[in-house]
Length: 79
Image 1: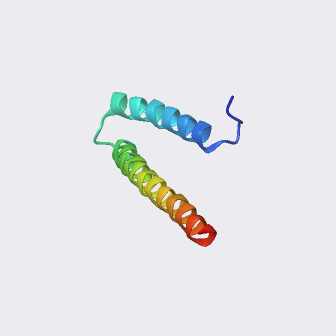
Image 2: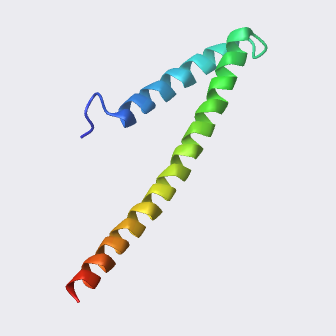
Image 3: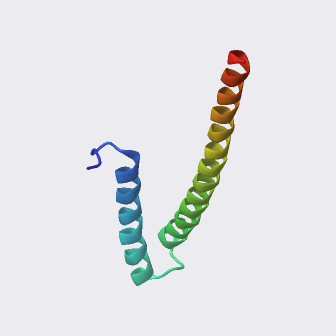
């Protein structure tokens, strides 16, 4: 069960709040300044999520390389 302070829960809460505000802005007109800001925030959120996924893949690859290298070095030291 996620803790209340977990980043995942915070992201879900922020996404929900953003969606609620976007719905209100769309109802009042997308050309309003608030609608424009919410649109920009939504685009930024998408970019941040995409960057986070890319960074996670790079981290996983680097972590795997480090583990393999450590295993190889340990084997070389033993032999």
